[in-house]
Amino acid sequence: MPNLDAVKEEDFVCLACDRSKAVKRLNLRALSNLLKILNTLEGDTFKVKPRPYNKRLVKLFIINRKSRFRWMILLSNRQGPTVFNVIQGLFNGFKNRSYRYFTRFHFDGGNEINSLLQAWLQTIGTFFNTSALYTYE
Image (tube, rainbow, N blue to C red; front, top):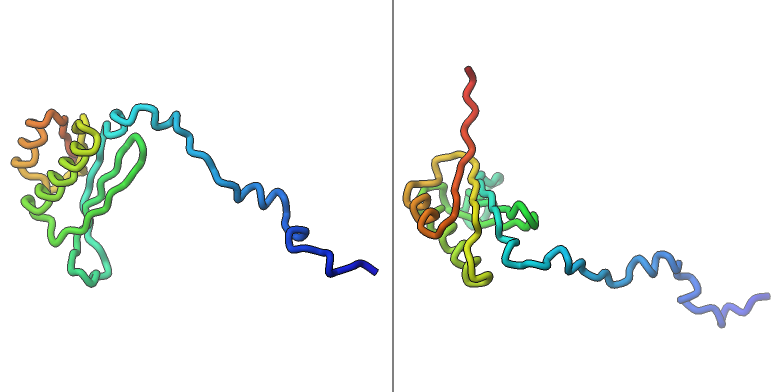
C-alpha cells in the first residue's frame, strides 16, 4: 500500500508545462537602435459603435509600421482642428521621448487632415502622404 502522506503537490506537476511557464527573455537585438523605431507611422479615423459612455464617437488609430505598436485616441469629432491638436500633441510627445520626429506619416484618405496639419508636418521635416480614394473608370 503506497504512503499517500508522502506524496507532494509538486509530484503532480508536468515538467514540460512548468518549463513553458518560465520567464521569457526579451530579444533586445530587435530594438538595438531605438531612434529608428519611429520611422513610419500610419493613421486613420473611424466611428465607434455602439455609442460609448464618454460620448467620443471617433477613434484615431495610429500604428508604427516598423514595430507594429498601436495608439488609439478617442475624439469627440472628425473635424480638422480636433485631429490636428491630437496628432500634434502625440508627435510632440514622441519628440520629447526620442529627441527626434519620425520621417514619414501616412494617413488613409479623408477630410480630417487639413492644410494646417500638412504645413506643420512639413516644418518638422516629416514626409506626409494620403491614400487616394478609389475611382471607378
